[in-house]
Image (tube, rainbow, N blue to C red; front, side, top):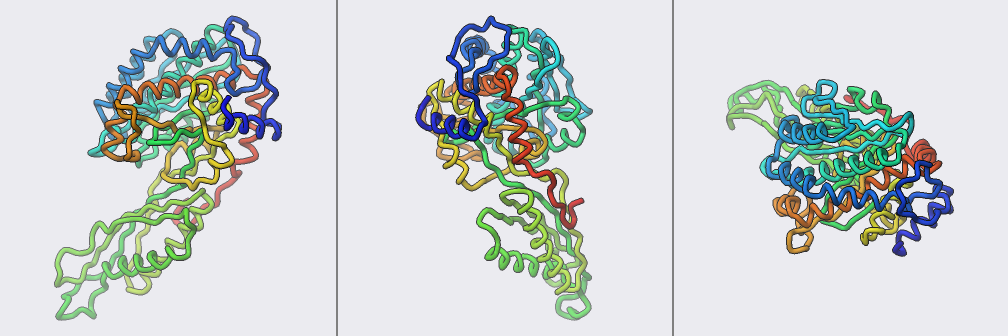
Length: 455
């Protein structure tokens, strides 16, 4: 282990989250569960490494095909069919296309020798408008596919109880595909114990991804038309309502937390300069460190728009969009195991105590899953063909190019091995799942306060 991973392991040992590890082994023939701790000492990692290397050509081809055929959310028929067809060709996998009637979602299940832990992976594959796979979802799909296949292979070799499930989760960008799947009971009906995935970035690598809770809303002000010169007093200016509300938002920004964000656009505000507009509209997005702080921010934000309506005598129609995203709750037990498996492959992770000081940014619907099931969502650095990391962050044209490189696939294969190692630890390390669930029960809020316009 590198020093940062040693400090991680020591901290978790002191907290009682890990047992003292046994000596590493490479024999994958013993059916008895491991009693060693997670963290790169799994006797199965050699088999994971060898097995995924044997699938490298297949996985690279899948990643490239998804990358080169980008599809927007809810339209990912090519990626859905590509992944499900491949899984249907693998022994032991039971594949459900369009699970729960969600057209481009799927569920693939590998069942072991009996009842046991149920580990799951999330495959994303939607792209961005005009930018293609500039968020690297082709790599997310590949890492989760590889991780699930390798975990299932160890289950097969060792005749282990439990299940490995790979979920195809569409429409992460903007539409909240995982939220739809949560609401449909896809994850709860499968009775998963943990949820595992990883996300590419321009660096550096981390066993965590800290994201913000977010909601989107659409706003309309209704007034009354009148001639702007001849009889303005007979009108009620809807545009004034939304402009006054935006001024309130601008002043509010002085009194909000550094992690809070309020951003939006005015989508309409009249059609003729000499007619007082009767309709003005806008769309906005709010972000905060967690769901509780998002609720507080949203109440203050709503007040700004109610004030705009009151001050101008207009009527406000405020609509929260469905499928808001929760912040990401990272499970330390599984994150430590992921970090150690990366270290075993020569990739060091930051000290977790320092990493947790970072402010969250961006949002993902995996956050919603992490409120219901113990989850990890580590981030991994990708590269151009010349070995340099993209200077552009996700959602840039440069990142899209890097997401299609062979160098990025090779890094993704390494990540898939680490994800598989975590899953196999959950399946085999005595007491690990109990520790994962114990931490989850202590760190995830039992209830999130609802707020006006959000049922």
